[in-house]
Length: 362
Image 1 (tube, rainbow, N blue to C red):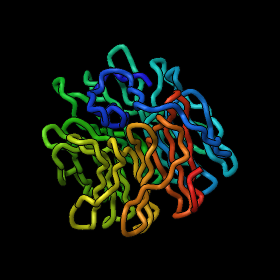
Image 2: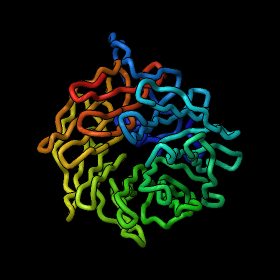
Image 3: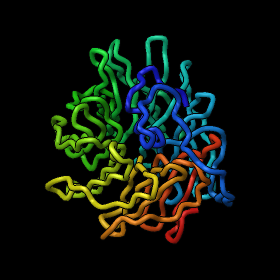
């Protein structure tokens, strides 16, 4: 995956191996340090080409989307029809297309966001599914600043959010855009450095997470009128957020001092850290999804393999992943407690898709 002209922490938090290594993004994401790949049966529901998948969204057991980019810098969108994953044509701008997030509300409405490169820097990229095909939709990029989008959340066909990073005076700051049913428009954000994840439960309640400098992990909340900073956690970074109601939400990432998983929970009043396992050697989390208050998933990677954690209503526990060594999981989506998807890429540079069938990931 090419690094955008706007080479900031937004790329680093998506590339977890870099976070584990403590490296500031400045080039292509580095592969995790890993031993030789182990044998692993190819899942029947997989889709494998050279490229990476960064985000996944599921409307039902028969309708899911995964997005990313090919190794040649083209947009990559694949669809699950209940039987198989198939690639769906998607537009790629002249400067390439790098999709990072996807959201869907129905069989006729889905969004994919990321960025493209131009001679003047990176520009935001938003594609929309109208039930028949994917089309590029005009999206604002701050003038003379550039911009990348990392995540998207949609509540309905007339309401959606996209967040990412832009520049102000040469300094990276959070970028927020809102779909009002007609057009995408910039919305002021209190975030400094970047926003990497967004979730919304209604037109009056949304969360965005990322990284603030100074301050560490950052959480901001939309109250129906403005974004307000809720809290920051020193030396940490948040990469993903999921919400099931105004009183229940999760945020995940990693600590910056000694690499370890970071999971925070919103109980309707405050955000508090919840204990989460960290394998030996360190780990970080990139994505989170919740089916209910008692069922949630978090994905990421350790120094040598993909990592999957599960919330059973009481504690977070590690769940076995059939991923090859050196693989990373970047996104996760949950349809129910018995049906979930996780996507990412392998050390060899190929797409990776896993499915939870209620018993195991395959």
